[in-house]
Length: 304
Image 1 (spheres, one colour):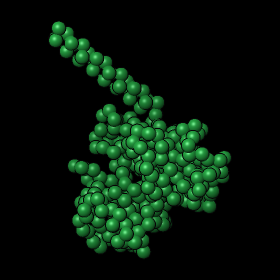
Image 2 (tube, rainbow, N blue to C red):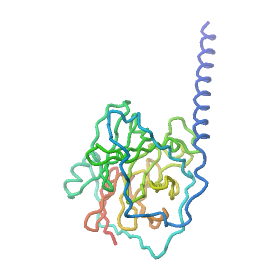
Image 3 (tube, rainbow, N blue to C red):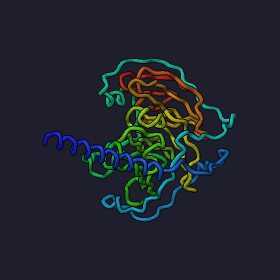
Image 4 (cartoon, helix red, strand yellow):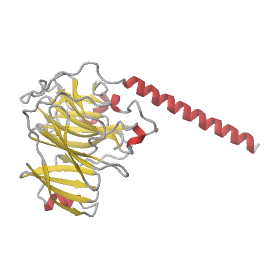
């Protein structure tokens, strides 16, 4: 009898695993390999563009919004030809000191920094706002049932009374090379400049579980509803910043290379790479200095 129970239990587990793997493959297949047409040059950027309100916003009914389904990115990365007349910043390390890991609030206060991110408190596993940001003259809120599944972005006015846009990034959930169940990818940070919404997205786990296809920034044209470029994988899993023509961001994880990158914001290309001791968590620029918070070290770089 015990042997029969063990056989039935094992069979049940195999069936559950097969169903789960089929569901994941179905999602990956549905996501596709990215859009077929990308702009060849960086002429898509319109700094003076403003979104128009589409109606009143009620944050109690966010799940009922008509979300625009964003097409999947190219998970191998798709950058544009770089205009070499547009110069990007270079960084020079000024200091590096160990932090206490949990003292981020003190780091912000002591360095007189201002964060775009607003604190949001939503019960775990209840769909709702997880991150909110002041950017581009809007309030941009990332929604999900928990921090590992934030796939919806809502853009409103600062008072949250007018809706400008709502996007569903479900097609970003799995890369085609995802190998581990639960290695979902989600939206992590967002900055808006004119018609372009820059979003960082990736998994919150080891890169091998996503077949090393994780950790991106994608530039999205909100006027034409199409992707302009997507960085190569393993470029960003941090809060990033834009300074002039440059994006400063970082990628790293336990047992993986930890680097700070400078990107060309118009093409998505990497321009500079700076190794750091631990994974970058956020970057804030003030008075031509880049304050870089990593897991256990605080860096200051001069911006040249």
